[in-house]
Image (cartoon, rainbow, N blue to C red):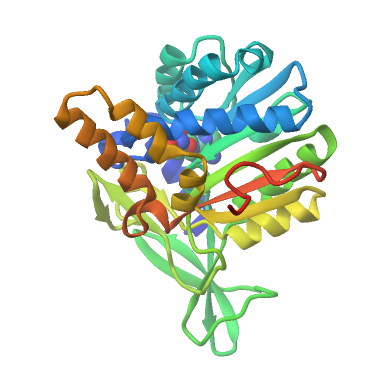
Length: 324
Ligand code: SAH
């Protein structure tokens, strides 16, 4: 019998070590090159707001194939060469398989297993669909008390547990993303001390309601999360209010969360895609616009996905977070 978070950590480590995850799911940077480009430009503007420290660490957590960072660096090199010269590229990635793919696209990067291992100093960090892969615990309200979910032979088992500070109706599941909170606390502490900002993009509600959001994707279709550990990608919704609280408690400031669609519109993604589409053959132009729509439209990824920034205390509102 294994506690759910231990099961999820083991299953995902095995999965990412042995699979190309993009056979099972796709992500914003794989859909649209403009996503990484505008995030790169976001980082360049925030670097200016920080006082243009040189050197500065530009990091990504869970870079997948390296697509987002490759697009970001291309845009940065063109629009902000002094930021390009000042930045040192660091990637946080545990999968040896994905590290190899990233190395092909991002020569000169340094790799780390954990965010806590990034070298000290001013930091700009991007994390798209990273926190959702981190393990969660699940508690169930039973008879006025709590049980916690374990996994035994491909099924859930429950053991009595202490779960202070949670609220739910009888029989409801409450998730606690302890690993994501720990990442937020570690980032919050170092941003408060060394300066910088971390942009977290993921799916989940602004405020966590009780419920089981654990899901598995295999070959682009939902699968039983407990059935075949290591063969499917396991994720859970990110609790943005808990992330913000953990970062604040560690001394950092927080901006957002704002829905991804609004954030990307404020960063000018639609205009950038229009500029790219101009002069392309009609089919290619239509495909570019369709890709951008997938990221921004509320019914697609525009609303469920949220953007939250953790940052040093004295930064004004960063691009994408200011209204107007
Ligand atoms: N950001 C990418 C990939 C998302 S998939 C994109 O948007 O396409 C999740 C990524 O996080 C993968 O690169 C995976 O190997 C990495 N990852 C998952 N769990 C991790 C952990 N505990 N520590 C470090 N990296 C992890």
